[in-house]
Image 1 (tube, each protein chain N blue to C red):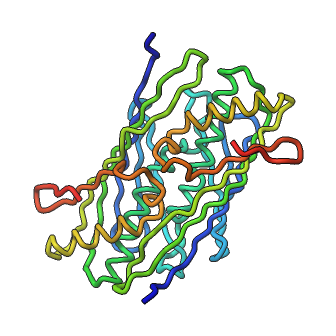
Image 2 (tube, rainbow over the protein chains, first blue to last red; image 1 turned 45 degrees about the vertical axis):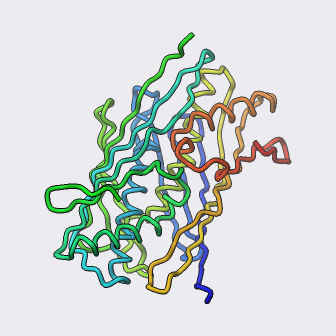
Length: 159
Length: 159
């Protein structure tokens, strides 16, 4: 039996006019929603700090995507979710080349996740696994680069 | 001869307290910079639209990261950059399971990039390739999932 599927499209219209600031108009086409976003760098990197740097938006987007799916799928699976907390640690390296630019690499993203409710840990595990499988950002990341741990009382379970 | 390397760490402190809104405090530790970010969903997905959805932040972060590296590496490589434009198209699919949640997949991210300056196309190609190699977000994405095209007068070159 075929499952139902759907597609999701976002468009970005991004402009840089000379400084380190970038203005990005994002549209969620099927919903007719539009968002004006921006990035900038701090003074150390030649920017004016008028907006968060791209990696701050990225950190928020990954945490937000996983949390949103925990919340949304909790309803679908009838698994209670009172609150959610994520401690995220995002780790990258740069290797500076002779000519000046650097080569970026990613050491990994560690998400320590606390699903706060009276549910049994088995249900929390099931919900977190569904949320990871349903996260559109994670679907585009290298396999294994995100390490998830779920809080179980005072200890952590690797998912 | 060993090249110089550096590490980059961002932390996220993310909280959901019951609605579809997520609040994420992001810190860029070595720079002592802190950013208060948030995501929400529109009414269709049970949110109140108090902030952009996670995928809007993600779209902006990817465009912003590539543009920032074009700008930064243009200086290092002495390749002139007057303005930059990116048209981004971000494409995902969801496959709904019997139980309710869906499995996310990513069809790909298409970035059409215009580096506006009087530089020869060879220099623009060199700069864009350096920026892609220097993009921390792309370093964590599945190889080949981002498709880059560079504008050359009225045509497009696949990079």
